[in-house]
Length: 76
Image 1: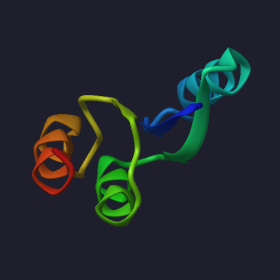
Image 2: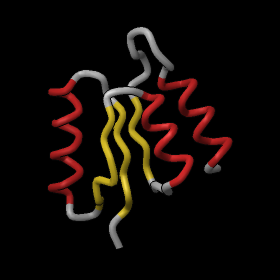
Image 3: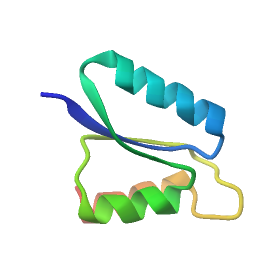
Image 4: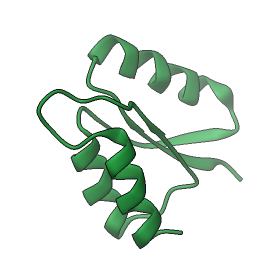
C-alpha cells in the first residue's frame, strides 16, 4: 500500500524535488502538488492524504502553519 502525499511549496524547483523524491520512493504516491498552502487545504477538504508536506512561508497568502491548522480541523 502506498501512502498518499500532498505537497505545497511555492518555489517550483523545490516542489519538483519533493515530487521526484515521492515518485521514486516506491512507498509513497504523489496525490497532488500545489504552489500555495490555500490550494492544498482546499484539496484536502475533499480528498484524504496520509502525509502533507507544507512550506511554512508563502508570499501574500495563507502560511503553511495556518493551512496545517485548517487541515487538522477537517482531517484529524
